[in-house]
Amino acid sequence: MAKSKRQLREQHAARETAQANTARLETCNDAYTSGAFNYLRFLVHLLAAAQFSYGIYYYLYKLYWPQDLHEEEELKTRWGGKFKYLTFLDVVLQAIYHTVALLNDLFGDNSVTVASKSLLRQLRDYLFATFAFPIAHNVAISFWVIYLWDRELIFPAELDAIFPSWLNHVVHTNVALLAIMDLFTCFRRYPSRLAGVAGNTTFMILYVIWVHIVKYFSGVWVYPLLEVLSMPLRYVMFGGMVGLSLLCYFLGEFINNIVWAPEFKLLQQKKVKQG
Image (cartoon, rainbow, N blue to C red; front, side, top):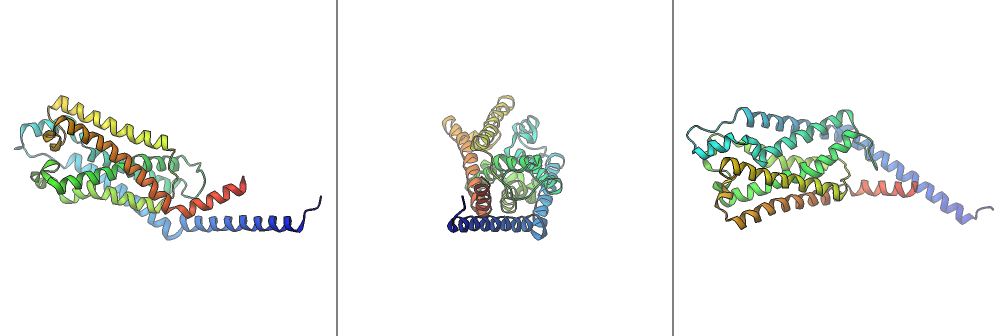
């Protein structure tokens, strides 16, 4: 049966729309995977991976507690070392994430696509969404809020002599700033809510358990603030740490959806046309 002129016009219009959408997506990918934008993304990952890796090295091998600290400080230093601090664990996470992102820039896939087949790309997206962004902002927000309220509760003044200011900003400020820069330079799809929230919550709960293990064997809490809080308030704080991490996870997902809304719209239109 011959098609009516109206049907032919509709088919022609749909074909033109699909072609225009494909052209816009190709233009978007060309701009995103090559040229200045590509170099900017690579530079962010290179500088971040180098910065955090050096921060870890300095933290482990160049940072020493003075000999005249209280005995409990020396015990805290011996048991669990630097790995008992969420700050240090976060820097390790950031170094791992940005190294994976850098490898993906070199050998993986950065295109705007519905589902990337690159394992490096999938690992990069999951690490960022679940750990790198929320933990970085958890650390930055909680540290600077407590620091401005009463620094002695989290970073006593006596540490200024052994903990350089640049390292303080690397581990408490730059972790968040570079995560934001990464969010604006890397197109990504967040994992399913179940996978992302489960991974983030599991990490934070394991850290709370680790803090209690350190307390059991060393006799003191990791952070001075925990020493002055009553037991109920202490567990309110632990719950707040987990809750803040989840809040930062949803914040990252929300911002990602806003920043990359045009690209998501193009992909959705392409998916509809193919379906």
